Image 1: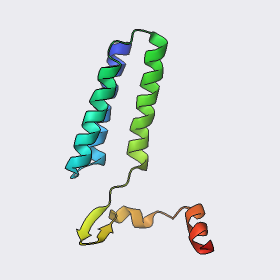
Image 2: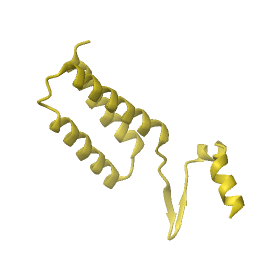
Image 3: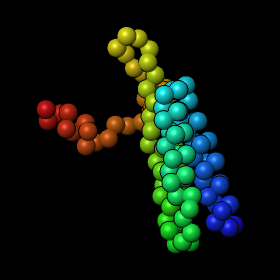
Image 4: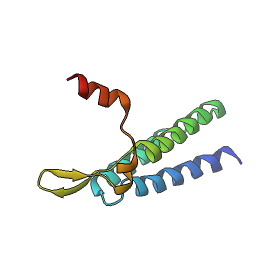
Length: 103
């Protein structure tokens, strides 16, 4: 696959991931859309194949991070947030629970 095709595929993938990760959060959806578009536009004139590959790697890493590390809370009441149901099955990070126990 040529570099132009890889760049276009990454652009589309980032926008699809944005739509999934920030579903129902119009402010985050818009901010992510603007950021993705700005980053691609600012590097539009890049011609170095090596630099383009580096940028593709960075974009792919960002997409993976969004897909695997962002958790959206769901506003349920005045001062209450809940997490999606599947999150209750995830064990808390030991370093965080140990820190709370020490306090």
